[in-house]
Image (cartoon, rainbow, N blue to C red; front, side, top):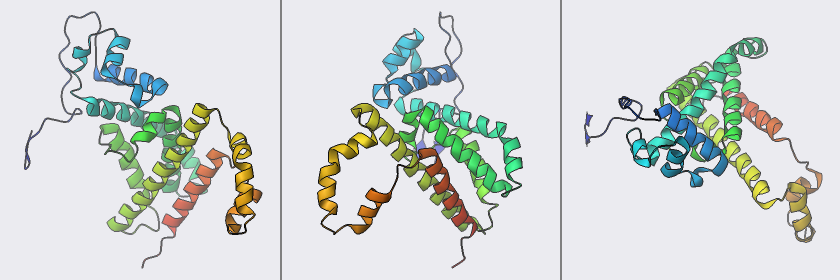
Amino acid sequence: MDTAYGSVPLPVWERPEPQSRAAPVPLSRAKIAATAIRIADEHGLDGLSVRKIAKELGVGPMRLYDYVTNRSELLDLMVDAVYAQIAEAGQHSEASQHSEAGQHSEWRATVLVIVHRTRDAALDHEWFADLLGARPHLGPHALAVGESTAAALSQAPGVRGIDDLQRALGALNAFIVGALRREITERRTARSTGTDVSAWQAALGPYLTRMLETGRYPTVARLVIDGTHLNAEETFHHNLITILDGITSHPRT
């Protein structure tokens, strides 16, 4: 494909699948992506390699390069396969959107469904959170989810033009990336160290007590002493609602 910056290869989304050939194991990009996702779910992105995928599929590694030219293309296919799950779940939730629209507007119900499905996908595929915000997601399913989100936000009362829409999307995406990466990191840490919140508090409790007794950190002391371990899903939903409330009532300055 010729561009103003020279000749570049077509994106993996626009390249036709290689012609099938007589081989014991038929391949497709969808099959390769599904296998890669299973491996990444179990071993993380660090444990993902073309050799492992090929072994799982029962083919030679070089056959995979007919379908994906590098690791970046493989990740693009994997990410878009997850977005396909998010988009499909959103379509299946249309009835609940319309019922919730009785309490809130339809744009808000749509955003809630999409964001909560994104969280569900990240919890099912933890590696997905590593790639959120790290690289553009431009596959057809990612674009479909992005279109649904942007179209819904454009209907919010506080969004009056393209600048407001850009800011609203930026705030929402920043929340999603930050909240999901933090939640996934906490899950991984607890799993890898075998240390839950109670054990962590017991280990560092004496030190923290000594520091708080100095009186230099009164607000932190309130959080430690009076605060409770909040439910992750409820906290995510509460903070998401706060973001949407801010978008709705965003004043023109």
